[in-house]
Length: 87
Image (cartoon, rainbow, N blue to C red):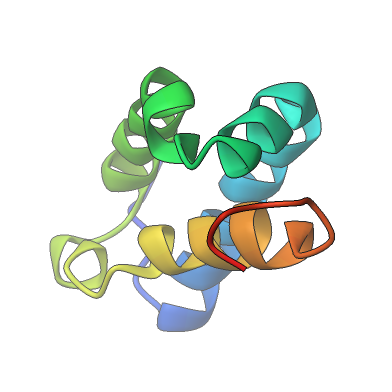
């Protein structure tokens, strides 16, 4: 499978992976936000997703942190209604 070479497609893949994490780990995400341990609670799943993302995109696109941004947008921002010490 050829590497993804465009920013648009790299962002799309990052968001798809983050969406899957959100879909399959809702309880862990809520718990992690409530206890301010989100990235610890989901560390295994996040790193698995990161490895998949890295294997699919060109190195120069991986360096642009689209995956990390997608995690924040989808796992954190979308859960603004969850009670947290942070907000």
